[in-house]
Image (cartoon, rainbow, N blue to C red; front, top):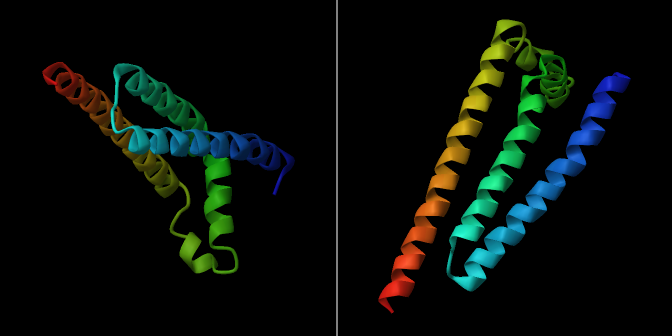
Length: 124
C-alpha cells in the first residue's frame, strides 16, 4: 500500500463512518416519531449529497479502486485478474450509476413521505 492510498483511506473511512451514524440516527428518529416532514426530507437530501460527494472520488479513483479490489481478493489473484484495465472503469461507472439511482429513489421517497404525512395532518 502506498502512502497516498493510506492517506486516502484514512481520510475516507472516518467520513463514511460519520455518514453511517447520521443515517442510522435519522432512520431511528423516523421510526420512533412516525411522521416525516419537509425539514427531515431536506436533511435526507443533504445527507445523500454528502454520501455522493464522498463516494464519487473513492469510486472514480481507479488506482485506489483497483488497490481495494486487489486487496479484497488477496492471495487469490485468479479472481481479481478479470478486473483490470477497462473492466475497472465499467465496474466503477456501474457503481456510480447505482449510487445515483439509489440516492435519487431515496430522496424521492423521503419527499413523498413528507407530502403524505402533511396531508394526513391536515385531515386529522
